Image (tube, rainbow, N blue to C red; front, top):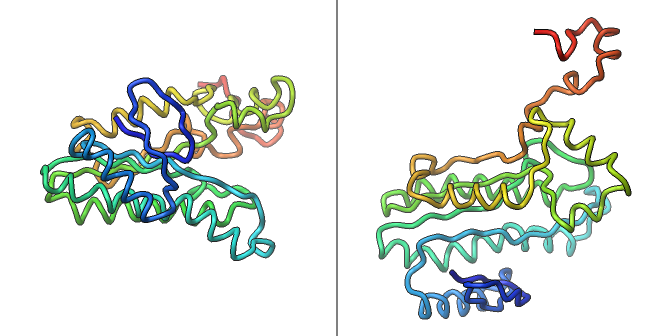
Length: 230
């Protein structure tokens, strides 16, 4: 297993190659070094990304391009470099990182939403173009995922976590392990029939009607069935 990153995380069992995945020459050098060290790629997972929360009229050219480059251009550059080795091998799996935020918008993320929507569209296109080489392509689109970085943005206490749990039908919190298990499945031969698909990983939050989140007192006042009613 090889990892391309600006930092050096020193993960056990991972051959690390330092690279800025928005820079074509650095990606090319790192991928070639990884292939020379480990052989042809079986699986590629693209998961680089940043976001900058600004409404469109306040977004500068530089901010727009920075978000699109980190999220979208990085996918293009990494997939382009890995594809020839997969084509030659006649097999492979590519898992791209999308987001529910190109389906259900959140305030102030126009560049991020645009990039993630483009990733899903690009993944479908690649599935059509390279399926004949035995290569599958799947997009994983998470909602809110519990990590140290996302938790640091929550208010102190448990209130925000309680609200996040109540926002989905499973009343759960999606964490990094959930994402890792989905990546492992999407990259496996068992998921080959899903090529071109987008898997949403948000415990059902994006399919919930706002009315279903109302407390029983509000639901009763609006003439809606109570949550415990069969």
